[in-house]
Image 1 (cartoon, rainbow, N blue to C red):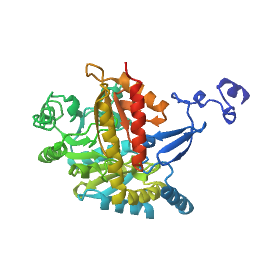
Image 2: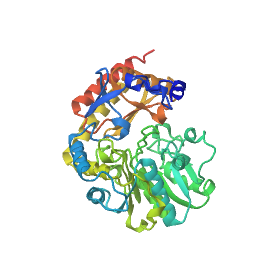
Image 3: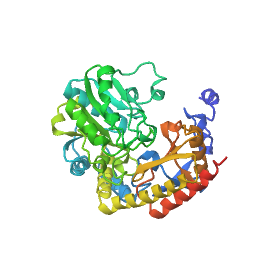
Image 4: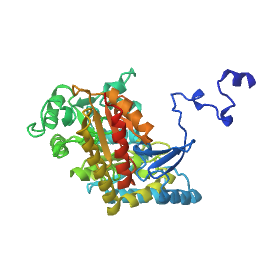
Length: 435
């Protein structure tokens, strides 16, 4: 035992405060967080940060929301976990609430996933099972997930390149990225080519057997791309005409993030299937849901299920979260604080040429950094992310830190005052980028 410990750096020293990097598979930062409340977290040195990514975009009610904590404590006394083969009061109630609050056509709920990647995979499986077809359309920059299957579908080669084997059948098509339109059009005259020309990809790049299209109503990892008015409505019509199942990945956009319960509502479009995760439990417990139309019921339960799907404790937190985010005053607060932050960030654009675009809805915002010639600038985005961190504002860079968009997804409990504080610090951070 002594020899084995001697061969492993740091063995036996963790209780004395040794650097955990000696054991971690990947690089860790130096900061250790110890406490969170609302939109703020604190580290071991007592430094306070504004968390503008809500954990991992999932803490819609912020850190340690008291109602969520109370629900979890209460459930701990009764039943922590039950197999998804059984009904529990929390899981029953979650399904009831999701059907009540989601677009009207979505009447069935599958809770047997515990995260967004597996929920998206389940949605794709359902579409393939019901239609008997294979291929899946995914927009450029689309992020389906991190599992092997989801990685195969992701809309960027960077995520697929290191791995020798991927699932066939992904048909990648240009996304509705108006700031950098693939077709070099402008919204006032494009005729919505980003929908109509999908037909070319089906004809020449697919197998001829297309089951589904999966799309984030606003892209998350891919750069916070907001589609132009009418895009999602036209996309639904396109899919209906061809018998293609339209899946909305609302893992980031759902649960009030856009100022509406679901982005489908914000854009006035109803998908055939919708996936919901991340913010579903409010303050960080794992749970995911797949919502479908009645006609899509039929895939056997054995075809898609995971050990911690339908987690009882998580479901108790989700019940409280759904009841909280449905309140009109809660959603109005998201729109108010998001509107202030968006307006303030756009005002900075005039003073800083490196800010190419500021876009978003509700509290799902993105700031695109550009070089003097207008090209994408991951260099400046990384520098700005660091400058914000130095000012105790936690943000993320798109494309898993390799893109050129600063992503802002604060908890939805963000106040108007804190929105102004974030904008102030954003302006200070931008000053550091001046030549």
